Length: 490
Image (cartoon, rainbow, N blue to C red; front, side):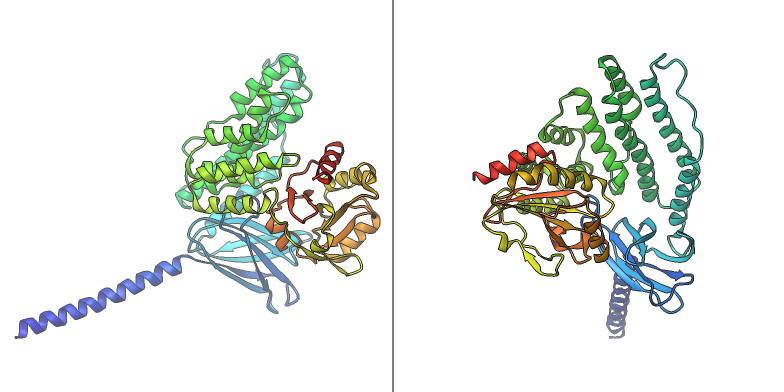
């Protein structure tokens, strides 16, 4: 009888041990997903507040980002805690987001401690703790970029385009961007065995993407100055020096905004070099969907469709959204595409905002029923917003003085006094517009998030029944007038 009893005891003990280790493993796994960013701001007090923008859903811009806020204690200490399952991005701001201290990639299990000092308008941060090595790596890359900006670069290789100053200038700019990337790679390689291979992959994609993206940004400027022969040489230069072979960066490279933007921009410029008259949204969509695959393709397509597309026919936009919904296999991206389709399709109810005007009186979309409503979003300091406001005031609005059209101008400033000051100085809106304010919520306001607005000016055209006509109405005044007149006939 002793042996069965001993066996039973052994079984019970083994069961308890397994249960203990299983629970410990689960607890350890849970803790490994927790990230903390804490520290001290030298000279700060309880009146100082910090905010952190936490982005674990890499979609486009700040879509899907979460905000956390923390007041410093009387000695300047602060702390943030959140959970992640993969690489994420955090941006730390101080005092209502007016000053950014840093933006960094983080990984599950990081425990970052920051000692922050201020010199004039700049912040210096010393990092320590688990995961701090990659923070120091990113800081070293930033420092190198600053040094590079103060350098003189090598000139274009002699004889490349003989006496063609336009092409030589473009080639020289490409050389400068290549040299910058090479110097950044030297800094990154010093951390090769000190940070995770996944993080190395993301930071590598960042550098490749930054250089490629900036080359693509140069193409339109030079194209508008080029003759037919130069255009062909620009295309050759683009293929050889800008349409980079990115190597095996699939997977974690999807977390690099620079890399995804580069993949989008190089297809955009490929079409621009092919067709001087421009291309449809559908043509670019089809090229993007053919060029890439898997997780990378899903993010490139989603980031393309969730950005602004001023002047694009809303029906064409919806067709591209529907195709992306049908082909995207990543649940996260499919979910955003479905929401965008449901919220922006022609004929769906527009978001019924309720916002204060200059006199403090609340204005809702519902009370504007019976009129065509044109909405523009702006913020102080936005030069493109000023240009739009000027064309609206001088060209568009005078065409609808006594008609059934109302113009609503919504400011995304965080400070009410700044909004009122900008209105008083003029330039951002018209006295004939209904001027509204998001009460300091800015890009975090539910109305703005509903339409995934990431920049300004952003426009909406809404029919007499408060339903969407277009989330991409044209900015060009003549085209906009035609669009509004067309809406009046519906």
